[in-house]
Structure formats: structure tokens, C-alpha cells
Length: 233
Ligand code: SF4
Image (cartoon, rainbow, N blue to C red; front, top):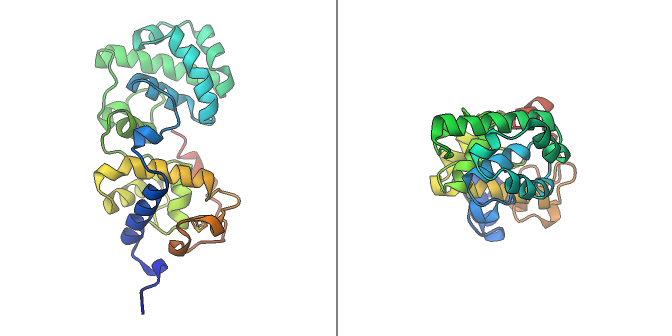
């Protein structure tokens, strides 16, 4: 009698989820990333702006922003009022302007105007947490990095890929199960599946390519508010 798919180990289930989502959403992390950007600088800025904001809105705001302030040096000397006005529709515009001014200054002062690729260096930039650092690593540099956002957290729990509840614990469990070259793409595909099918309020289990793997099919599983807050950067 064949082993039920839901009885797979978490590691085997993660690998099967990866295989199926790659078939559904083929491409690299860079090609699947919804934030428009032309280089690592534009990506780190766009990712900071994406906190509590849709990618579509960020993509409306960034073209005029980068036309006016195309480099870290230009952004570091941006007039705060003008920057806040450009960021207004992304929400939390004062805090984001503060982060971007600080981020651009640190890029100029410590990194010669370049975006660093090491996780520790990226996390030193104002407004950049572990999630954003992993986005930049995997999308801009093609390096191993598995961003854990609210979708990755929710799907990992529903699919029983890990018992961890903190973003870092989830990231480590997923990274242990997958080869480093898959990390970035896996994260983006989980996000796309979370938006299209396994939504927070009403997962469309009947249409889900993971249905036979999923111990929680048909059961909405709200994420604890505290855990949700911890994924914001
Ligand atoms: S079966 Fe349902 S709960 Fe499980 S991953 Fe698919 S949509 Fe989400």
C-alpha cells in the first residue's frame, strides 16, 4: 500500500512542494520578483518601500523616485520634504523616508556607493531586516537567500513543513530541506501560491496543486498577530 503523501517527512514534503510549485511558477527568483528594478540599489529601495504596501503601488512610486534620485549619493542628499512627498502613497512615508536617507548614507559611507551582498552587511542598512536582506541576496545577486514573509510563514505552517513559528526558525528549516540554489525561487513561488490559491482567509484547496500533500487542506489557519508583525522587514 503506497505511503499517503501527507505522511511524508517534513523534508520530503518541502522538496515535493518545491518541485510542484516550480512546475507551476517556472523561473528564477529574479524573473519572478514583482518589484520592478534595474539594479541592486533599486531593489533594496523598492523592498524597503514594500513594507505594508502592495508591489503594484511600489512600482508606481519608484520610477519618478529613481528618475529624481538615481544613485545612493543622490538619494542621501535628497530634501526630506520632497522625498516624503514622493513616498506618500506607500504609507508610513515619514519612516520610509528616514530609512532611505539613512540607507543611502550608509551605502555611500561604508560601501563605496555599492549595495553589499553579505547578509550581515545588508542587515546593517537602515530599514533592512533579514527578510529584505534575503530578497536582495537572492533576486539581485543570485545568491542563496530564503526570505520568509507572511505568505511563506502561513504556507509553511499549513503544509506542515516545519513546527517553527518564528521567521528565522522557519527559514532554517526550509533551508535545511532544500539545496541553496533553490532557496530564493522557493520563497517567491510560495508567495505567488499564497496570493493566488492559499490565501489567508479562504484557501482554494480544490484548485491547489499541493492538495494531496497538505495536512490542513480545507482549514483556514490564521497566523498569530505577533508572528505576523515579526515578518515586516
Ligand atoms: S490544500 Fe489548501 S490549505 Fe493546503 S496548501 Fe493548498 S490551498 Fe493551502
